[in-house]
Length: 432
Ligand code: SDX
Image 1: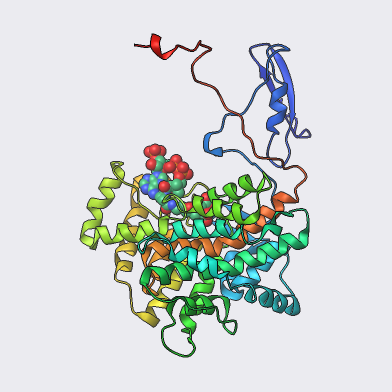
Image 2: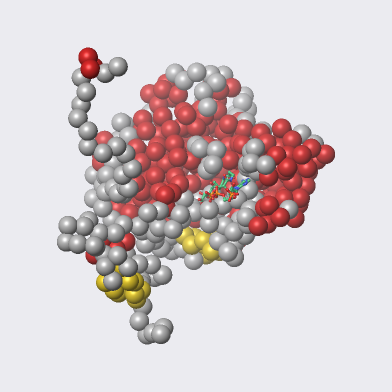
């Protein structure tokens, strides 16, 4: 008989007939409580087996909430649609870190602090110039963010909140500089130093595109669109790269090394590399008349519909809705990206096809973002780097939450061993 008054799970171990009451907290049971379920005193106890952590809450977090069934995303309780419409990227970074929207003075101070950390040591510029001309910018970013840890040895003092805050300012400020320097190296152009008179997005555009003019004037529509895209990418609960950031950070490695590892995780085509893969996919499809054949190949398992599907969203990714609308605003300014027609038709067909409907596959954040970046004149392999710039405040907010969480220790999962039993070494002379 159900007893609604008790937040517990009663389980019977049929191997022994023993019954156990496991407390239920926030919709979870503690995996460590399973260890008490044994067949005898020598038994290690039960573990939960959860490859890819599909049903494991590894932390408590107050930063971001996703409701996958409803397609809801909130940063510190604020709906992503409102933040995209009314806020700015640096204000959102402050919100993610501090938990509250800043006062006017606090925002001005934060903007000043970020703006005055945009420069990088000349050795970093030289390091970037040592990469091949055709090096993928994400490979450069992983290397240079890690290299930054060698310039700031004080970053290892993780117990000092002021030290943590300084490294967080340095990282969010320097990511655009590293990205722009990698882009200019690729183009064979001299780097453009940060311009502290410009906004965060405006300065990034200046470092990317300034040529011989005395001062770069960002296009306000492009500047605003880029700022909104950074907002939309700022955080997303315990995604693959954030889990990596937390995992590396749990060993108390410095935040530059942890961020470099998060960049490496984001690089994968199943994660942040999807925005680049979407544009390559749309170019490969080439025309709306080829969509039906492509969809068939996806349903045959020959390839994936990049930019579709999500581990958590089983509804339309709310970010994709905002980006799709933003795309048309940018196209009004710089001209329509012809690939949008293929993308819109592909989305329409997929959303009506049982294969995708049954698997609850909808466009995710990566489906339309690459089309905007391409229309801004950015090369495809820079797209995941733009994702990394946007996600940096989220990685750092999650990292600091982990550092301050008394429940967290060094991340070290267990395993189920399925390898060979004990056996003796066979000398080479006795092997056939
Ligand atoms: C991001 O976690 C986050 O929050 C990530 C992110 C963030 O902000 O940090 O939102 C950013 O990474 C967005 C996702 C970008 N990646 C892509 O667009 C790549 C294409 N998508 C997929 O590879 C996939 O949907 C994932 C990786 C996103 C999610 O994979 P899951 O949750 O492990 O799902 P799955 O692979 O188990 O798929 C379930 C079923 C399978 O079919 P069956 O084996 O059951 O028959 O759906 C199918 C999959 O084959 N499927 C797809 C598909 N995605 C899943 N089939 C075709 N095309 C796809 N895109």
